[in-house]
Image (cartoon, rainbow, N blue to C red):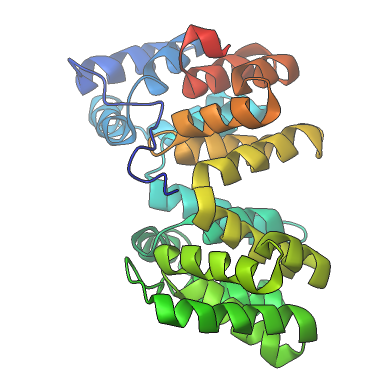
Length: 324
């Protein structure tokens, strides 16, 4: 079941939008020694991304200063990460996250997996462009130098952004399923390559058919087969691709749950997913979370976060009172 047709975000364009007035209010909130954090939350989480960019432009014209620079200077910790993250256009935000995942101490593989397994061809092209502009660096080259093995090969394939779109060939699906099944049995380098080529290049619709055929041939779900046969980041990346093909919001619900419960509230992952999906499918992710884990994302955040950081996350999470 594909979610793209009805997936929904939680942040929408504000009606009666006035960027000059918003810029003025932000200027007031960021002046002096104190900082009106509630004002920042009420403006920046209640405007869509394109509106925030217009506010930043008005702010620059009005005060001769960069809004992102002022937010970085005045705020701290995770609250700063949220407010600054909201100010990036989506491709720039992805580029920012990938850069920091690779350029810190050690590589944060889960960030690479989350972003590259889930983005569309168009999103990947824009992200590569933004990465080059922001960091005067080539995303493919950086991934190549910071990762290794079949994990690297699969990421390099994904970052090409060359997945087929909307194309299905039922006869081919059975052949692809056999290749996947053999790759799970034999596990040679060549089989790993064939496995990732199919998962990275076939359309979502085609893979849907391939996974059904795989179940028919092997009597096993493709995720279970991958988990049995492979390990490490290569296995995690393959599973992420399969889960995104099946139901992207459910994949992100799973990643949020794991960030909250398996990694002791992994703030970076939580912030990244909430911001990146806020205008795409965060409302749907919240529904999947409640269905799968029996508790609401709102409730989880309220339990684990605090202060203005908590307020900002809850404002992005948004939603109906009965979900809380």
